[in-house]
Image 1 (cartoon, rainbow, N blue to C red):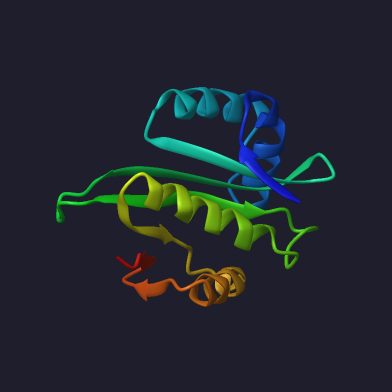
Image 2: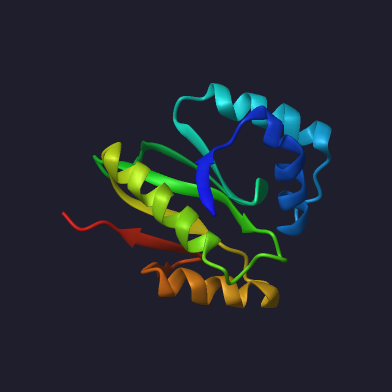
Length: 144
């Protein structure tokens, strides 16, 4: 299994993953979204691959906050194909996103996750990865 930056060739797989995440997305919609996202220098899209197949993705951005002086990262999409869950891809993707965020000077990283019953396993995963439930989202502060 390996983690790499997404490319335009991954658009079909990204659309498939968004559908699994519960956000109906056509390949054409994802193509438009991806082109806008990849042009934004603060946005990052990583994919997990196994045997040459995209099996997961994380999309995040780094920016300033209104309520703090430091840079902060926010995960805006994170999903592993349901056929490949519990094999370490999610952990690898999340760790790589955290590493990039830290390297770029972010002081922390956050994400939101739905409150639907089917998201409870994801909530446990985030907590096991060191994220803390805060409001309706999860936050993890990096050590200095």
